[in-house]
Amino acid sequence: MAQNDGSIRLTLLKTGATVGLSALLVLLLRWILGFLPRLDALTGGHVGGDVLRFLASNGQAQAQQTVSIVMIVVCFVLAVLVVHGTERLLQRRRNRN
Image (tube, rainbow, N blue to C red; front, side, top):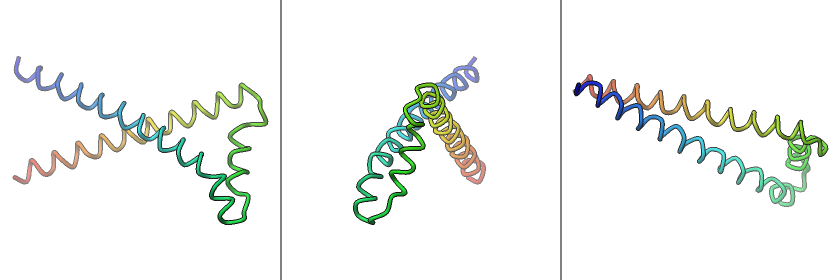
């Protein structure tokens, strides 16, 4: 029974870490996208504007939703990989000691 409690606790911890990290990555992505126009102003280029125009998909709602979903899924997958990698790293450290 103690093993199941630890497993449930670990699962809840990993789930919370994954959701929290996903939200943090989405916020970071939004901040970076918001910074692109200022980057263009500083550099005199137009790459940031081009990226934003691409993500806006010419105002087509379906394309904008698709881009948003893909960005959220990418952030979630990255969070899962980071949590999994961290778990493996911690297990290796525990096994050494």
